[in-house]
Length: 284
Ligand code: NDP
Image (tube, rainbow, N blue to C red):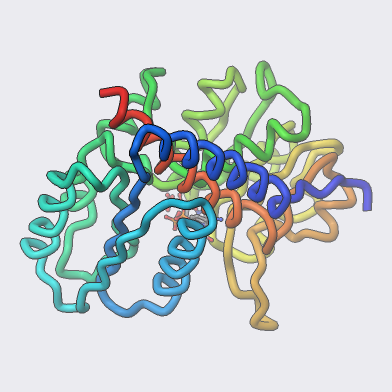
């Protein structure tokens, strides 16, 4: 295998240790960061993610408030909970676990989170700030990807970067973040023509598609940094990414594994954003 593996576990542990230290500093000022997470319904994957967030908070010294709401919660009820959390000065971060049940419009719910408590970075206000180069809470997954990229020592400035996927939560903010870091960015999606050729030119390749093995070895430029955001179940039932790992690792310079990669960094970045939101509240 040619590529060096980017160790998400070790990087995430470093970030969480820094967050813990930041939390201790805030304690001296009498502030304990608090993250509120709203989970609607009983989607098993969401329940696992929320439990992970609860554990991360405990590890970092962050207080967590988990609101587990029934699947038939109405949009009005959910907005009512959000309004209460928005007005609560002891709550610094608010996160609504996605996906939401069909009766609830996620865009309206996200827009109801005050931008300074939007630790997922999904509100139109934070997205707009990211695009216009203003300080903001950056979406956790792209922030984690950028930290992994920077851990290689390679600067994105002037590099050709290809992001496969254009979702609001991964692809678009990832592209904005790479652009803000002076990369030359191409965004690919399901209507892109010549996708394989574009990927094969990328010095930085970020895959956020949601299809196992979508990025094949011949789509990887020799020496490229390959960041695999995908979390899928392979045919064998095991977790896997969007990148066909073994052949891609033969060609890449650096590559992230699944599991043990971007997923852990996303969780660590949520803790970092929660600390940041608490620090901002103190400064306000
Ligand atoms: P979405 O389904 O919202 O977006 C997928 C994107 O991939 C879309 O932009 C879509 O294009 C594009 N796409 C789908 N099929 C093709 C194709 N054949 N060719 C080219 N592009 C294609 O997914 P998410 O962005 O939410 O998530 C992507 C993956 O990342 C999933 O596996 C998810 O589980 C994982 N994930 C991992 C996280 C982590 O922490 N590691 C966090 C969030 C997500 P179009 O827009 O044209 O439909």
